[in-house]
Amino acid sequence: MYCAVCRAATATNLCDECASELDRPLPFVPEQVLSAAVQPQSAFVVDVWGRVHSLEKRTAVGRVPLARGLSILHASVSRRHAELIADDNGWQVVDLASTNGTMVNDHSVASARLTSGDRVCFGSLAFFFVQDDGLRTLDVGQIESRTLRPEDAASPALIPDAIRSQAETTHVGLPRLALRLIEAPAGGGGFLEAVGHRIQLSTTQYALLQMLHDRMTQQATTSSLVRGFVPSGQLIADLPWDATAPDENHLKQLIRRLRRALDAISLGGMIESRRGMGYRLRVVPIASDQSKV
Image 1 (cartoon, rainbow, N blue to C red):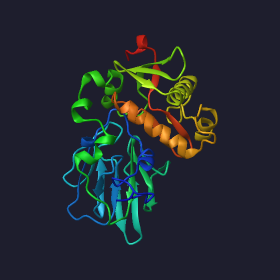
Image 2: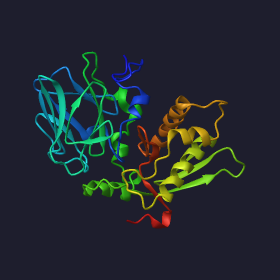
Image 3: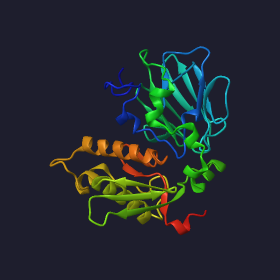
């Protein structure tokens, strides 16, 4: 198989590097994205797990379950959010005056023409639009490396109240999360404590989380839409790398490994990437005694 976006060889329809460009709120599981197409076309949207969702010539997108269309069960998505429409000139996305808007390649749009590989975001959820007949349907075993197990996602011990409460509002502002970074006494990395768990981090992983943590806390008066981002170039320049000439590929590998480590405590989606802006925490870090919201 190959990645539907960059064509790299991969075990699913989306490689890890392209998947890292798709927003995924906390907590979020595959069961919250549902789709049904009676007359599917040769166009799809691909979610962060590499699953393909077939499109009809007119496909509704919204928060409520639909007999036909794309249902995204998340508070940032409006009940009637947008439509994906095919006409003689190709495909377009049309926002239906949604509360939190629709974006194409990080630009807010009322309507926009789509080309294969475009990144389309409905509220806080991003997908790739793809025109390709070679995509495959994935089973649960093929996507588990990018998702929480359903029983974990439902466990109150693993989902902080601050994050769970986000589902009660359509506001897309960043949730608060009590977390603590502890540097190892003898050097060589440290630990992250969050949601009642502790995980060990390498030196570079620890330094990365510390930079993202500090940037998010320093920009307290900045809009939540852009708050906390650290440019890729700064991370490459300032992190303590083992490599003599670190580059963008080293950074992507580091982010991928850290997300997998965070998956162990159900926080794999805590690091957000945005093309042209860099990386940030998807939460506002607070001290443990401030965890009530």
